[in-house]
Length: 42
Length: 400
Image 1: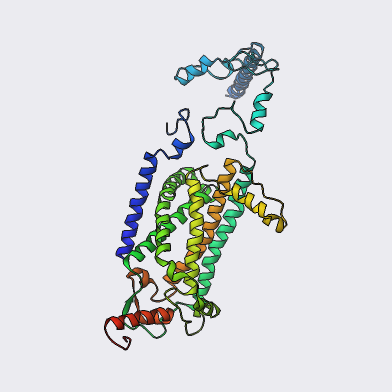
Image 2 (image 1 turned 90 degrees about the vertical axis):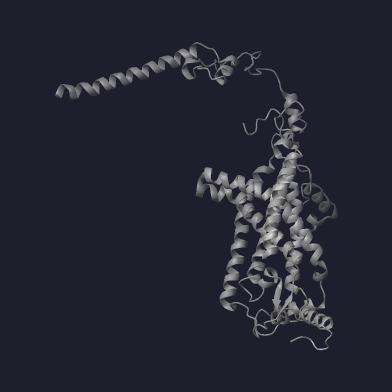
């Protein structure tokens, strides 16, 4: 079951990493489809 | 006391009629003394100052409206045909929306209602029926056939079926697919089933978490898909043994098992379902992850029209000039439909790989399977492994 646990760990790392990378690259929906007139999250 | 009993209702009645009369008077005043709230009133209210609403601010006269030159005035007799012409032609340069995506240029799009009703109606109904029906069929199959046992009992000797990296790739795609399936169903069934059952607040938490998981775990799924494809394609190319295997129904009913290599025809069907449907889900998913960046459906519909396929089936040409929203709507529907089919396939795969067959789970659990299990279900592969082992050991007879 070591392969299973390593796959789960890899899944977590990939998911968190993808979220971090895409947000930093300015590819979030908020950045892509809105402009300064939209106050998202306020 | 009798006097009071009469007096009290009387006082109440008189005060009530007095109140309504006062209201009528106030209403009349509003109408007869025209005026309007100014931009300053609105801004002051936004600053938190106490600017009264309601009857204290007189309504503008309804017959004239506010002067056209005023900030809140109507256009009056002036024509705004240029504006509407631009909107109608989808060239609304005069309309500035706070959303700067391609969809902002389309003020109204009819396809949205069809998509909404299809998504909440047939898609959810038939998709749910497919999953429910698959589970029901498997339950009936289990009741009739029971667990498929190792016919001649365990040999007590194991051989390696899957290496560590193969099991890692399998579990990467497996765990991510289960997570994606569950969170996808949450997004799809939210408004129709989950909000009525759990309320907006509870669903909101699930939906936000589910969306995060769905968007980000997708990359693990795609990586697993590539790994599985590269590692197993050589073993999953169709060959003659598959025909025999399929004709004998894989030996599911009755005794005896048709010979098979490392993967039998049933497993090959699952492999190609995962590769073809999984790739299709990934591409439509990428188009949803990066909205309006990938257009799949407009060009596909145009090609189908050019080939005359819809006409051949008795339909007219499919509308290929899609608005950006329609592209996304088709991507969403395709993503969900193909996912439902793959989910049904995978439910069957999970069943046969765990509860349905003795000794099957070990292949992905420890990577080692019982020799007798291998001989029964993958006889050609088992022979190959045994002959390799005996060669390696310098023996002429296969190990027993």
